[in-house]
Image (tube, rainbow, N blue to C red):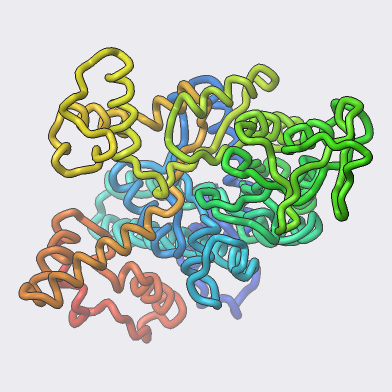
Length: 532
């Protein structure tokens, strides 16, 4: 419905209610309706799920249509990302948000900073999803409020051309609300617990949930040691639980991202249930590190499985965990991916120890032999030393091709001494094109950085503290922060406006008319930035 049609509809509603509604202005009410496009989190989940499905189809047609996101831990950060994306690129097409369980644990837990081990309150995850969308909806209201003010000015001077343009811009307004891929860790418990938490996350607005195949009570960050996986059937129960949650809440297009940590996980807590050779449980157990034992050589507390007619004892650690055979990680990843997609997952996530396109592609090629349209979400993680990794990749490539690398020390390639070298330039170019190249070669539909704003907040704060508490004092803030905000057109330089002051003034005028006590008068210091 267009803005003008909305006004007409509300005029009829107000007129039908007679004199008691006489002070209600249809155009003001229409503005409030337009500024609040999404009534509930489920409205958002349905809207964004459709966007993701369309983007997945576009990627299948052309891998150049890959998508991206940045991890976020606060609504304001999410809001500023989307405002910046619209400012620089004109639209938010194929740009999402990622909600990282790592950052929830580290930054949003009532316990204080925690490691990524699912020890934070699970309710903090849906609460953050709701917060992110609250800030994105406020960005819509703020931007539309500015258009309404321009519309009033155009009408006041009889500028028909500008009036028509602004009405069109209002009708075609692009929301800041975008899909979010939300981390549900390993489900925070059994399948029922996963289902209950998934519902909360979906009701808050999440259209895509990412779940990993680690055990809930032993969960580790994907880039740390000590990871423990579960048998496939345990993981598939949680995938099914999430699908039931999506269906129950009327979001059939909801997306499930199945993450495998098997590449770096050498342990399991359980021996899988198996009824016949070659079934899924038997395949999982085939990766166990076992020793054949004679019936006469059985010791106390041993556990046994049969393999090819032999009695085998899986290696059991003092932690009561079982060990996988070394070198089986890639095979386990491939099996994890295939079984997840065959049982309801929509996208894959393979957690790797380094950003290496051919390593990822080697596994994806094997998955695509079974499921041709398999697609990945990939973590462009800050846990990787990107500079060192890619310089070493270039070094190794040159050495293999017979190029002279005697001027470089492979173990010290991170050194600033190499920054201007041919090797460093080539490595930086590979980093720049990594996402596009991996989308084309390795089936990566979505690239994300899990923890970018964790690091940018620390870096910018360090720079400000050095300048402000040093000799630069106030100039350290003015020169490096405020002046740059003005020069670069950063919207939050007008922080009162960003926090909703003008929206509040509009409402005061709607509610109180000429009696409204507004904050945006001539004495508001934000007027100093009118020309910014």
